[in-house]
Length: 200
Image (cartoon, rainbow, N blue to C red; front, side, top):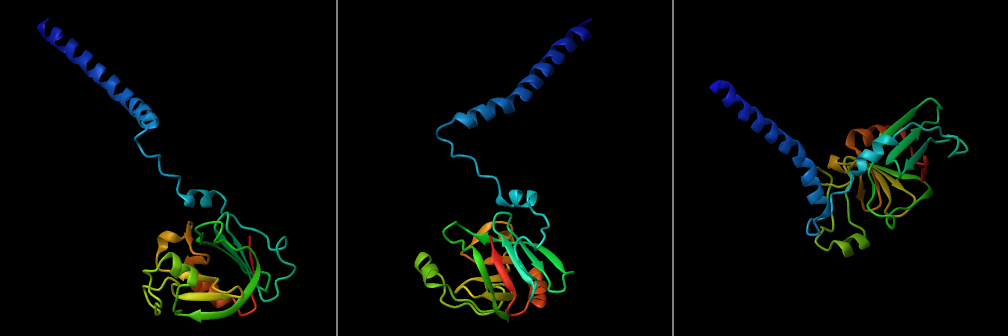
């Protein structure tokens, strides 16, 4: 009998503690939600939106032909599409896009130069925003253009690699379009000077 009397309070205590534990997250959530001194929650990582809209596209709504091949950069889904002039080659790569709408340029351009092992110099506007940046960075692991760069007819705009893989799938550039180094190397080999480019 004493044993039974001993077990009942213990079981009741356990159940009460369990109920308090189950209720705790809801209570904590309410406190976090309405606490005016608590900073707002971090926004959802952009890469999650990118994954949901990362899908293959057909070239015909965007280009009249595939002469010299074609590159479409979709800044909304953060993806780069490439179609080869042979009409059978198609590649889809995740990309980084500009940080802000003001830095984003859209429209038609083309590849005018290809450089393996590019050097980099910040633009005048970049130097103004970031005066601590170096005026020149040689090719190598510290170069923000990665291993390869496709220079576009728009001044200062490029499609290039990056050594910082965290940038891919995010709004993270000062205007250019970034790819993983292995992807830009593959794209670099397929494109030619004159490849048409459309940013939407």
